[in-house]
Amino acid sequence: MAKGNIVKVKDLAQKMVDKFNMTKKEANEVLVWLVQEITNNLKQGVQVKIVGLGTFKVRERKARTAINPKTGEKIEVPGKRVPRFTPAKDLKEAIK
Picture 1 (cartoon, rainbow, N blue to C red):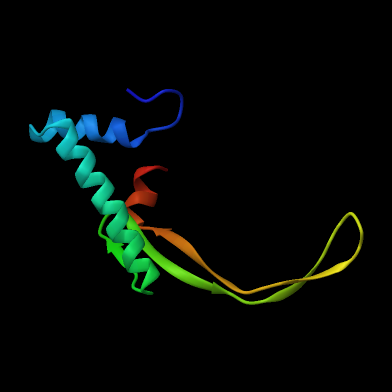
Picture 2: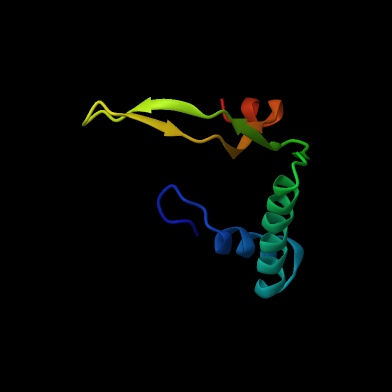
């Protein structure tokens, strides 16, 4: 199964194969499709809420002025969009 503390897509796919009697290829396709759908929705600015897991959304980071710690030079950091995940209450409770 998973090595160390990391569960990879192939590990999740194998669990789906065992649970739902599907092929490894089908399970992998479902997982890849899910990630693509979440990504596509976030690109469009649509948040994705999966009950029991959490909410994926996009946050806007404002432009700011930072300081290079080596040189002390001021640098303009442009604003950007970043993905954000907020875990559901059930998930938080489950891992306490």
